[in-house]
Length: 375
Ligand SMILES: [Zn+2]
Ligand SMILES: [Zn+2]
Image 1 (cartoon, rainbow, N blue to C red):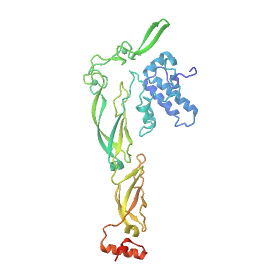
Image 2 (tube, rainbow, N blue to C red):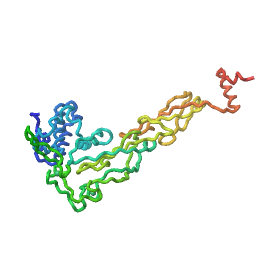
Image 3 (cartoon, helix red, strand yellow):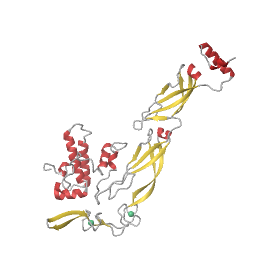
Image 4 (tube, protein in one colour):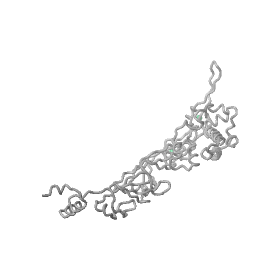
């Protein structure tokens, strides 16, 4: 602990730097030293961890206040020990990672919604919401736009999230000076102990609202029904998620809103079966078509196409239609369609058809049941 660099120094900042400056400096440091960009570079990894640790403290108003006053002793001395230093506590960092890596599918999706120990006064990210959406196989193949109705927590439109009646402003709590925490001294036979706890006057919010907003009763948020039009990308598969950044519940104290995660359920098609980017169908074929060859019509996502069946085709043979599969949801590159042919044995033959088949069998020297019963 003794050789640790000052957290401000780590991020190239001066004491008293603004929340925005801290965020910017951290983003720069994390981007410059991210292990994904420097595989195997131990020095970059160390700088990355150092920046993470510094940011975890300086981005948290409560920890920052303690660090400013007491230095490293003011923040949890065990912070950063154990599991590599930055596994937990990812609340606001999720946003920054989202910015660095572009968010989107998968990736760092796990970080955003993680619970962390939150300060009462600091900005808090809103919860992410998860909804299910069922679409047809064809809608998945071509992409679609869908209206969905959700109920979420929105910032109160009357007070813009302040919780104060229009025309009034909250008072900074005089007891805690807006920090939401107070230090208390306790005299015991062993000496004087100082401890910090939530401010009893403001309940830890750091603010006192004298006339609460009537619409949200001082909460700053209201539940609202929202109709959203969302775009589902072509090629999406059953169980995949479309994330809409910032469309979840509103944050608190100026924190960002959570995300809306739309889990897509693709209804099965009566015609097509899908595996990744490839789709599969079976097509019936008469044994004459299989024997002599034929041009048959088969359904594809783009409509009927003709498929040439060569003579002598066996049942179960598979034909490939290149580029007739599903588009890859990320690249748009289409897979193939595979057609398995299923030979049909003719039924309900006419007398003439039977005669011809019998002749066919006779030429081939095949025995048939029909011949045995002949008299
Ligand atoms: Zn309000
Ligand atoms: Zn207070």
